[in-house]
Length: 137
Length: 110
Image 1 (cartoon, each protein chain N blue to C red):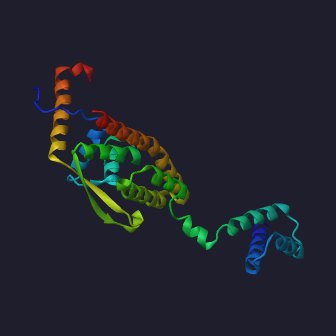
Image 2 (cartoon, helix red, strand yellow):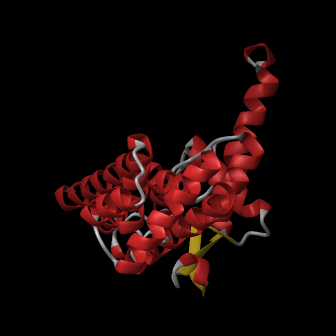
Image 3 (cartoon, rainbow over the protein chains, first blue to last red):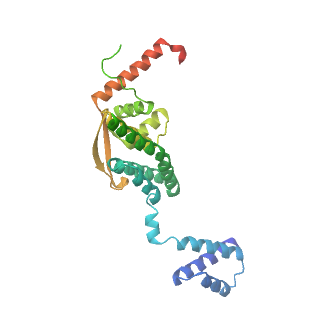
């Protein structure tokens, strides 16, 4: 029974993808085939949603580290160390991606950036204090 | 025992970083230093803390840096290699000697 349902789901998904259609089309196809299982329909909708967000542009972008976290680094790091830090973080990102997958790699990257914010701010403040001290003396 | 030169105290992380670089033939970049510290003493330091400390050590002339090769895995960004200077090595030795002396004089404390 389950196999039959899966086959029907696959058939519906293929049809929808082929005709590049939407949920209304799905409903029409479902009625045509006289499929009355609402749970299946929900599952198809979920799959469709996932496929919809899987455009080629998006999949290429998702292979790279999170952009906002990267921007935070640009914001806080002086130019002389920026290349090295971003490179190290990216190297780490690819290593984690190889070992544990993309989602964990992205999480790891964000955590690394968040953990780095305080020491970076501290470093900036220290530099300001050193310059101020020199100017006063 | 007192040296005529002005003594510069090293923090724990500064010592670990200097030793990690020396362990790797006195030529390491960020990821290698981080990995060495993690493997040897199981301390996971953040990239921010690492580079802030590296910069401080460079300002004190304990380290020298040079740009390395860029790889595809790093998004085409160049590595930054660090080398401990003679001054850095002397200060580290002095700091480690102090610890050794304290350890021998007062072993109960450990």
